[in-house]
Length: 514
Image 1 (tube, rainbow, N blue to C red):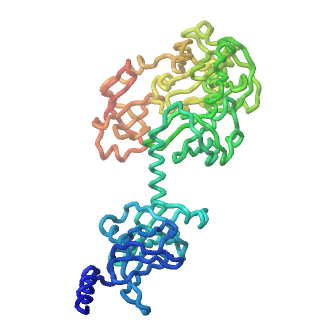
Image 2: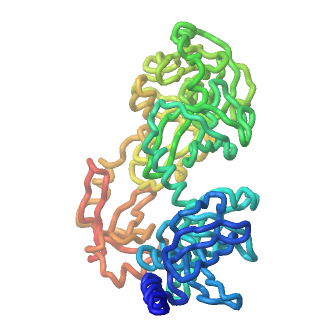
Image 3: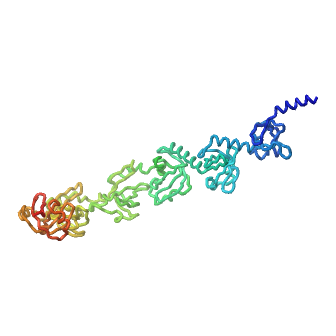
């Protein structure tokens, strides 16, 4: 009998596992109590796992297979102590060691808040999520712990089994994915819902769901508005139209007024060219003024269409906002939403009689009104403007700037050289009122003669000298010693020899090499 028992014990022992503490073993749930889960791992006795190690104990079932870690083969009470949580952590770290690297994305559940951050369950292991990397600002702890989230592995030490996560980087990645999807969906003319994110003086930024678009103030209303806050407010939800977008530069142009009916559709019939109408000035720019001639309809009175009399006008000096003026419609472009207006067309064009009034060769008087580097503008009768080019100011003197000859506000007598009414140009001459002295100059300064001169200016290519009154000549750099030329200054006397007289070109060439 004792031999049979020994044989049976040996047979039973052969069916039992040889287990070691710290190993992970497969087992079957044999029973479930309020405090423990009893697991059969094929050992001589069943093992015990604390019920709190299971996240959802109600989902456990008798006969269910699980893996557990052998913590203690025999505790003080002679029981086999197992751990489901540690087995999960061990498996988790094994998976992380094999498959996961820094920068990879993991999914986990926030278990609890701790000092400086949160503990996250990832593959059964506890990872740390620093508060600075959590991206949970404004979210309650209850809401945080009721959802699964994706995280980026910020730092990992496999030897120490230390894992630090970042939700912030994941949020950035998720936003980028949403943005890429939105960019792929965007089309011109498409309507999209958005939320007003911010308002500036020039428009409002609309969050389209990961991509911000600009709703410019000019695209908010068909009527002119002074500030975007008259139309939209921060947080407001609204439907906008995609006018244009540039993915490379992350720019989206939006429209609001384009969703409503366009008052310009009837503009061509309502405001035909030639119509005289009154309107209110709603904007003043250096190049002209915008006039509201109907609700939502504005026309441009360009500075060139304000008056016939002055070539250059400053609208900001002539008008103020709110002024009511009478204008004439020149052109209506319904598609481009442009109406060109004119004030000068209401008056007779003085240029139509300019050719008859200012015949070529006639003398006229005028007032010097302005300058350019190459000439002076002179206001003639009827406000028409002509120009004296610097080359028409003196027969003999080199003019560097017109103010060397005439001053602003000075009355001058001029000769009309040319009139182009179509181009609105009158060319005037000052020197032509005097006889051309070059025929007598050639006689007075024959080639080969030596004369006294006074230095006017020393330049890189020669020395300018005055021979007599306003008669100037150039001593080329090749016709004077470099040392001598370097020592000369304005007012110095210099004896020169006449080497060239160009009557047609009105130039005298002289040499200091006597």
